[in-house]
Length: 125
Image 1 (cartoon, rainbow, N blue to C red):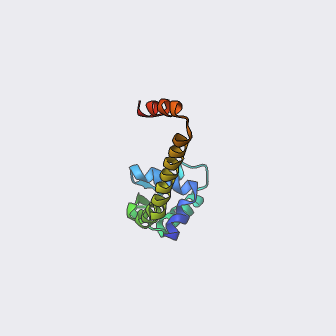
Image 2: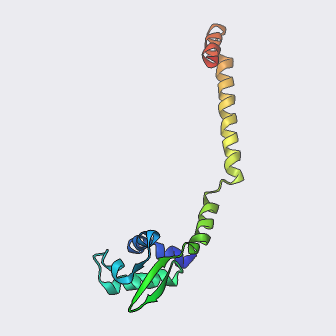
Image 3: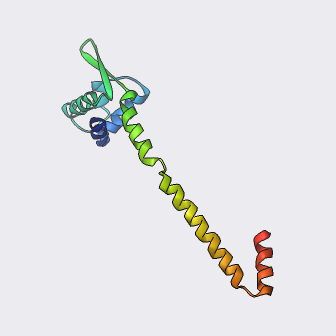
């Protein structure tokens, strides 16, 4: 998971993955999409390959790259776990609801009878 996260940290590598999401591409065609040198793009491709995010196949003199989405599974599971609500989150929501209910009851209890009836009509409307 660490290698995947580090590979995704670079904007050029993320853009390479966007390119490969829709099609396979040669290293040369990937390099032509960026204003950096071909050796720099080759290093980015190596990082992605070592993280398991892309695979390459030799096609004559060129290498053709394609994306491997399965490498994201562990990172996706970790992010889902972080986003999941904890039992404490639900308890704090329930506590907040109870606090609002008690405040509303106290305000209603302190209103004079004539205002109390008007307030109740507004709440039920």
